[in-house]
Image (cartoon, rainbow, N blue to C red):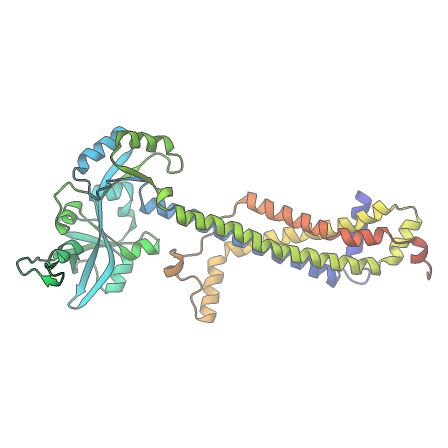
Length: 420
């Protein structure tokens, strides 16, 4: 085996130059294939992991909701859930219309009503405050920095909030089916003061969620104090809470218990399928490199006809000669995989700097947070994924050398040395 590797290394290094151009091209193909595959899988893994992290940060581990939409006595529900061993907080969520100037409305806003202490304790909203403070007492709200920029307002400004429930109560259908305005009813919209701005680092959440006190939210939606649309619950481990969730379901048979995985099942499934599809598609880059290696070694077999004839005349077996060329493919795979892995680590380490540089050069945002939801490109290197990529690359490169190895092993030494 050592002799085969020694000759394979010598064949990769021609006499007139340190490393042949053909060898460099073959190694470069494997390097780029491994690097691209490693970078894409690391980014997909990082995107999935960060998405899960942000989902857990902005949602409960699981939530309890009523099939009727409203939980009338949320305090009793919270105590019942806490008796099961979970932490719980009543919340009230509903879409609202925000009027931030005399004639401007924003319809893509959801009011999230909860106690300030619960938001600080469970969602750590106090740590996400950018300006102002977490103060929801006395008809105050905390909006996201994205909202503040969109509406051009700051801490201390006032906004007017319209609820869909109150607006619809003013319009009704008469006996003939026509729409008419109920002049006997009217309402005053809610006026709130912006006490602070926050950023969760998840654009789709920051774009629509506004925090308010739960009692103010109840007043806004014409609900009795103590009402809630759901109870957010937290356990010790969001990834291992089957026993706790089953316990809560048994304790509250008239309610629905929805885990964060169930609430985001479609999104998590798509991310998992995308990662697998990326690996399946990009492995063809390495496969193309393996075909290139096969073509290179076929050429090398013709160039080394004299050397092959000489070593076979000295007693080398067909198996040994085949092993030399298989070892060449193996060495190219190993060197290319090592270089590709190193290149992948470097690119992943400086990924955001590279994106920023290319964006400045092209004048285009390559990673718009409106589409990808995060402020920077995430990446998480899983060493088991790197091991699979490197192993697959070495195997493909080694298999790609079998055809030229077979041709070289069948070479007749007498024919090879006829003109020498």
